[in-house]
Length: 217
Length: 161
Image 1: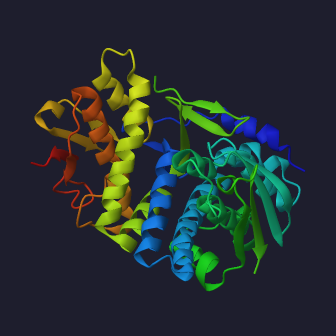
Image 2: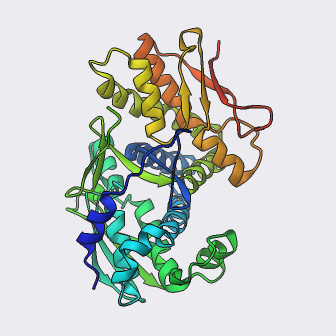
Image 3: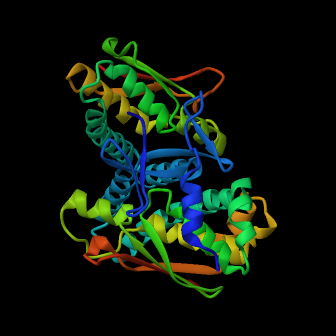
């Protein structure tokens, strides 16, 4: 099994800084280092306004949340996909891989340098991924911004990106370096979708940690 | 000043006492577009105002005790990966961004845009104006690379009177 701490430390040393154009090209994408509160607050306000406009109808609220989770798919698909195809991943992680699940372990170890909180794998197989997140930036932002607990989980990015991670490893077989194009995206998340997910605990609701469960459809 | 501190024990990337997170151009443009497509102009204003609020707090922390605040605020903008900000004409109600992350990526992902897409940058410019002039000024994006990169070499932000 991969030494996840080793991978986290190796990637924490990577110089991910802006170039002379004020941009941060890395892993075949352009990165930003914007405050987590920005993403969280615009998402929460969107959810609130969307629901208010339709008298807090539960189905409408669910539709708004699905849109935010889809943004997480886009994030995971492109960022995790780019990282798992990168020279850096092949230099540090791939030599340690012994089984398919190690692709998940390696990528989760790298998530821990993104500022998203501390991700810990509770269970991983082709059928299921259970993650526990300490200090998730989304849940943390909710409690700080609204100074109260929510009655529903708030880590939309974490759920969407985790679905994307399972889809990339066990559905798209990222080890074969597929093109990360619209065709593959549609296949993984629309036409022949294989994974779904939910957040079963969230610090925004008053739990100690967040818990994400991804399962095969 | 523009240094980020990574705290692995808490999974935090800190700048100016605030939590930053790494995200890519695909997520940034998709999230912004999703919110605006669903709720229209209301979400344009929400995103600008939240950017203004969080950036005012962060920039105030980061520029405390620094003599050349303008230059520091420009450098921080680039350190966030958002392009090159020029605040030299700020007192006349104008600033520009070259290589705007949001504008370039919206253009490449979605094609020519009808309106400016640099909502985060608009809020950042408003925050910069508040710190540098001591007054709140309602800057708006009046030209954007994403509308027509052949016509607009850079994004322009001006105070609307």
